[in-house]
Length: 253
Ligand SMILES: Nc1ncnc2c1ncn2[C@@H]1O[C@H](COP(=O)(O)OP(=O)(O)OP(=O)(O)O)[C@@H](O)[C@H]1O
Image (tube, rainbow, N blue to C red; front, side):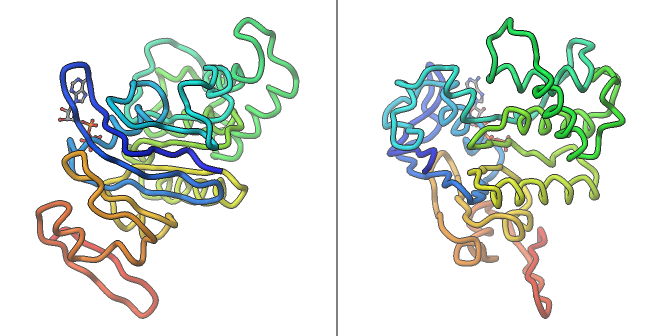
């Protein structure tokens, strides 16, 4: 079971951003997508989610072309946590998480007790149950990020795509989110996340894809792909590799 891109070219109306990308998000696995600013990560994600049409090539969901699957079915199958989110309206955290349940009922259907229980459980799971009644335009950016992840989980999808999920989180919450990502894969979901921290990929992902200038330059098991040398090539900058008795870490040189 996978959400897969095959020879995908992607971009915007007047501009091709990436070409010939083949990769897949497999059920039960975490795939990390690493690459320099502007390399095309967000554009690739949006194309794999069906938010942007492919320039050429294809995206498939469990073997079926994505463009033949209804929007409702896509919404039940794939959850997306976007990179930056400004809360324009004063929805409470609970109301935002409940929006994740709309994929399971009609747009105007009344939420069921089960929907409320799932939403409450996801707030609890991310340690933000105390924010349930807070308007999301009056909480911190990091707290809002956790609310959006809870909304994605409330969707009960089979695949979760997260664009820089830890970008605005403190050190403790980064660990919490990365542990949740691991647990999602262990419960059978396929997960893709983008990050600027190769150590997160090393520690929490099974596979990693390196994207530079719209091309995948390497992809495979994290231990096989991630090295000081590949990261130096990827970012065009020096990288220091720190080796301990049980672990390796990369530092910007
Ligand atoms: N709406 C848009 N229309 C045209 N070009 C865009 C649009 N959004 C982004 N781009 C361009 O597409 C290229 C890829 O951008 P993208 O956001 O996919 O990169 P990224 O790898 O996610 O970057 P970052 O790590 O900085 O978030 C960039 O050159 C960017 O300027």
